[in-house]
Length: 335
Image (cartoon, rainbow, N blue to C red; front, side):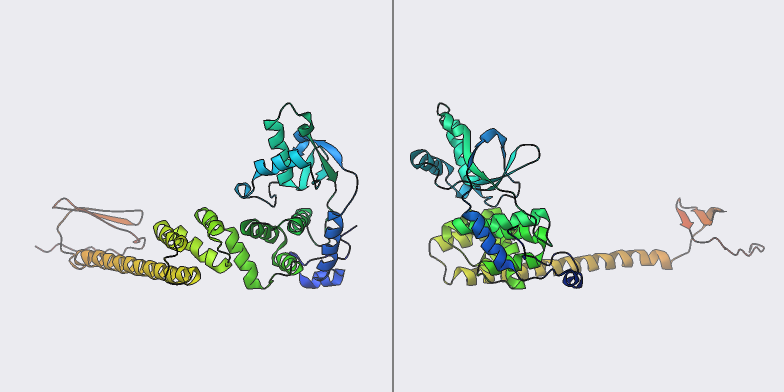
């Protein structure tokens, strides 16, 4: 098994794992194993496109960032240079491990060149992904996809962020930290949080980030918060950034504008609280006289199930509750 010795501490007590000999090192061995998988020269087989399924958590999720027609035309002219890898399922179908865009390119060719039968099936290598010790199969698969894809093609910032966020959701923070470490990237807790924040970035910001070459994760997260709270303010910042009209860096601008928005929100919250207090005070002052002035003339009076009901001569009815143990003194009426 290519992943022997690779283990991560996930969702289990650290002491428990220690007793079982499951440690947090060994990611380097897994990395070497994945490199070995990449150079696997086993014979490719032709897989019918109709039998291929895509993983719902496939690594390269932002399809708009990849020019499928261009890739397809290149394959048609030069042939398929690198075979994708699939995993055969129990139902006889194939699940894409790597090479999603190449597979989609073949599907594009089949659709656009229906008279060319060679696009009905794609040559691929069949490879089962072993479950890594201490991880679920799904977490193992996500890590394999992440590292394998990063080995042969640089991902977009958001592909990488979403890939790491998926690994975090399935395998926990330690899994993400070790994957980052294996790529030579910063692996602190703060860095993990930043990647998760980028993965949640507002849809409005994604194209602007790519076009504007904004790469600082903290800035992206801040801009995304601004876009969520005040889209108009966000658009103004981005337009000035693109036209080079900002009087400071995009990072400083985003930080400053977010501070203003927070201050504005805090002011609104304070006004709301003050308004609610005044309203409560008015309600209290409005009911006080009724409580203090109890002079009335009763027309009818009844006491039933702990409720004292008094009908007044001027047409009002008063009910007093919580009087289960009402003491009544009866005496002669004054003349």
